[in-house]
Image (cartoon, rainbow, N blue to C red; front, top):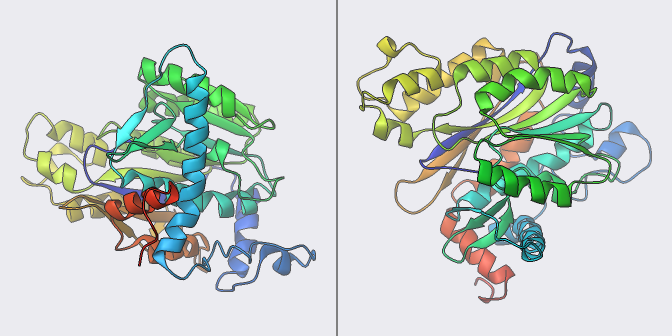
Length: 368
């Protein structure tokens, strides 16, 4: 996962030409929206469902307990990756960023359980990462090891044991990162899953993805788009949204975009990213203006946005997690997951996550 500048993340539910199988499933989920019953209780199968963890509303009552609950397994997986790397003859690269990166990984982890529990029950699902990186993140001054976005869904399984990603499609353009990702992914790929790795530009790979999805009988995808800056074009987003049935989590540069918006050499790239003619860009691009334009473009694809999660660090650094899903007459249950996630993360900052990481490692005592 990568961020030079503050980012806003958007998640949206994209349809394809034949939406009936997934829409039928989503409509059944919508019928249960607003309740706190488990999936098992709603289906009447007598099994214990999701109520114990309340993925729709976590039971943990304080930020420290909740962050610890979700950070500890990430750190355990990071340790496993570090041990695997130690067996190799040469040191492999990692993606080193600030502690705020941990909150994005927690958000992705949090979303995996409801996604797999609901959708993998009825159709083959795949995980797609367009800017996959090397597979291992090291965050903060202590370089705490965490699995990167492509390895996290392979290494952490919190949905029922029969709900998994049937296929992983991973794209990384940097050859050194790609080689490290290949070694790590091959080592930690779950037994029931298949893997397709490609070393290419994400804007080119998006044109290959629909055929790969169809060839492997995939009914739905969870797609993660986390570029280093403005590499992901609006044309690529439109291609993805209109040709692959999927949920997408995309990193949107907010205040970072504003800082470079007056540079004439960057404005064509901004135009390409936003899908707005360069002649229509204001002299200084305000982050809210840019975000609203992106939202309007998503709305033209039939997407709604209901809430956002601001993740901050010291100073002006921040990014927002924005869900945008397919418009429905009754509202989407996907919003509930992100609403509850906002309650947990909103107002926290990267340094707090760093403190919790030290506690998990036994470096510090308990808070308070």
